[in-house]
Image (cartoon, rainbow, N blue to C red; front, side, top):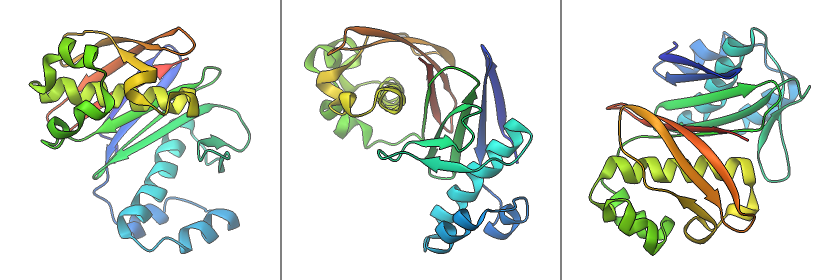
Length: 206
């Protein structure tokens, strides 16, 4: 089940490739009435796997099953507020992060050539020049993933990725750090990343 668990400053991160069936995952959970109703409304097998996989991953990290709820922006949180959480999924991969006191943001992205057609939408002209101008797919993927992770922390005030979020130049390695800024509030953030042949993972603690 578990592909990788990462620990950082009281944060725990689980990265997992969903190869199990819906039935196998369902057997590992005791879904609440609320979750059962939500689950039964999901038609897509992929979405069903993600729904169950996130809950199994959280159970693995926390050692118990806790109800997930969502705020008005669709951001997930634990019903008992015992931990801050953030979740992400891409293709068959999911990533979950928990922290007892700090707001978290996480994003996982699988490699795709499409990023070279899209990077101008989420990077400013300055960022484009500083970040290989689309030539390095891995760097574009990490920059996109970084902004997604920040959006999960900041919310609607960071919805314009190109103009409200800034990723500063960084070197692409198997793992490393990125500096970022929320421009409207002049707030700096430190992002951490892991890059494999299967995915780019970026997370942040606010």
